[in-house]
Image (tube, rainbow, N blue to C red; front, side, top):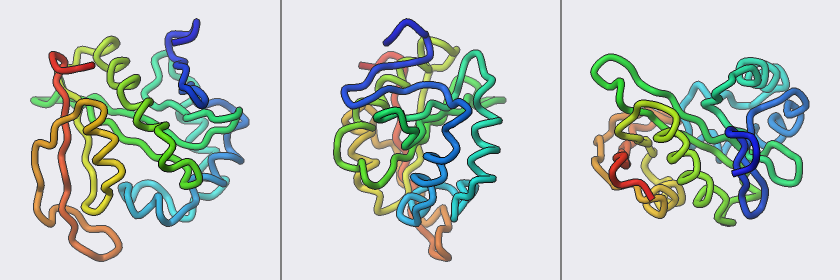
Length: 179
């Protein structure tokens, strides 16, 4: 971790809050069908400059961010974010992430997910962090397993992506299990 409580060093870069100037890189890296195929539909495709402006504007002002830009070489090339749930799930947080396809397989998310998971446990009253992974996204499942998450469930044909029913895999880690 660097001097800022919300900036974290990685071997190849860092995790940091979103800021003005990230829009062009965000548009370039996020507008990728292979990324969109593995995330929820609220993630736009194609990812336009307007989408990037809206994302940066909505995320740059948080004192305690819940979305971190993956910064490699001064460029925002991905995101790791989370949402703390409410009602009976109020001690749960859902984590999600994406990374530019050109950086897949380099261990960036394998390093980033434990860092953000610990940030969630250290900063919020959360007992469980979970992730939902669409069928076929083996790389993301492996990232979560390497971060200490357990494969809890398969929700059979619970999601729809590209007009196909897909299984949803649920991975989770408890506060007592964190690395």
